[in-house]
Amino acid sequence: MVRGSVRYFRKVKRKVTATALKTRVAIGLAIAFIVLNIVDILLTWQGLRLGAIELNFFMNSVLALGFASSVALKIGLSSGIAAIMLHRGQFAVMIIGVTLLSIVCARNVMVIEQLQQLQ
Image 1 (cartoon, helix red, strand yellow):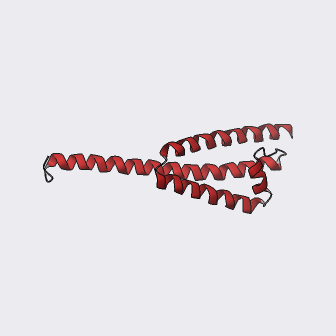
Image 2 (image 1 turned 135 degrees about the vertical axis):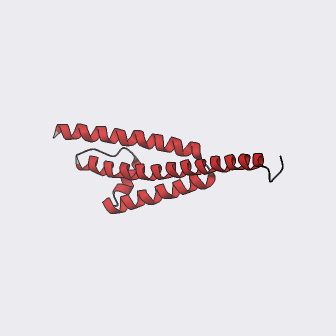
Image 3 (image 1 turned 135 degrees about the horizontal axis):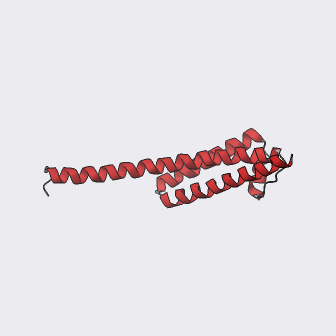
């Protein structure tokens, strides 16, 4: 293949397009990871207001800081983790993280619904 040929251009274009798509998906996963962390902390606070208890001992310490501080800390930590995963190209880890956070948020919603029915 000669560098200036049409076949070479098409091959390079396909490679660039695949890389651009992979980058967009990775950024989307990172954003989803951050958003799900925000949803998780907000649902956790909603559950606590309704009488739920936090089972994660680390989050108990974070929640003791108060609403605004715990939300800010969760946003900061999740943004930092997402940036590290993006930088290292840890796409599988991002998919696992987004999946697990989705499950946690769904569980939080179920607990909140059960607590609302009790009141």
